[in-house]
Amino acid sequence: MRFQNKIVLVTGSTRGIGKEIAFAFAKEGATAIIIGRTAEATDRVRDEIIDIGFAAESFACDVTNLANVTEIVNKILDKHKRVDILVNNAGITKDNLLLRMSEDDFQSVIDINLRGVFNCTKIVARAMLKEKAGRIINISSIIGITGNVGQANYAASKAGIIGFTKSVARELASRGITANAVAPGYIQTDMTAQMKSQVQEEILKRIPLGKLGTAQDVAGVCLFLASEQASYITGQTLIVDGGMAI
Image (tube, helix red, strand yellow):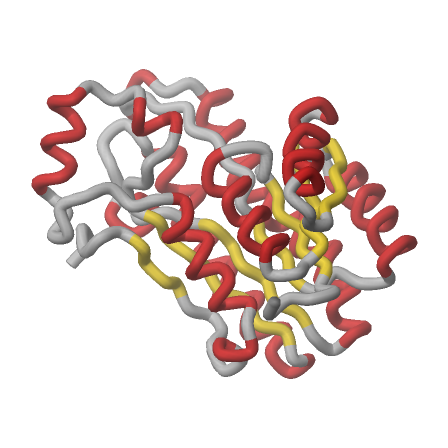
């Protein structure tokens, strides 16, 4: 129970990688704060965690809206007085080739994937500064490092997260706060499950370990970065891709 009595806020935690991260922290003793776009979805995950005997709370929040983020974080602080760990995971894709990509599709991905990280980090960091402690973990992507056809918006947002993380790490280090990024490769999710078998086979050929990663693989890295064992690690990007980017 490495995170007994810790308060962990996880954005985009109603499904996929974010949900697994929230469960992983809860199972290690933390109170997992579930953040998602709708109360119905966040409450469902909260109840799932509580039903297996662990602590969780839930809030619907639009991470692109700074006022909304401020309101929700203040509610958490009113009750718990602090946020120990922030995991910025909320993200979307709206793929298309550059010449076919609309302004709205580009901007909406930037707003949720990158602006959302800015909003949540800015507000939560204020509370961490008062405590002179904290862990910030931003979920980037291997696509932010390598780029990908049809994902100029997504790649830009995820590359932006890496640069943002490095800057935040420099700004907050003197107050005992670390900031790191995690860059997953192809992970088994609802999204990858919808890929045609031929596409999956081509992807697997590019992965030295010969298999897709799991949400648990990503969650495990987040647990490490939030732990005391990673107290001297900041400003880094940990790639979880089975060797694809070698």
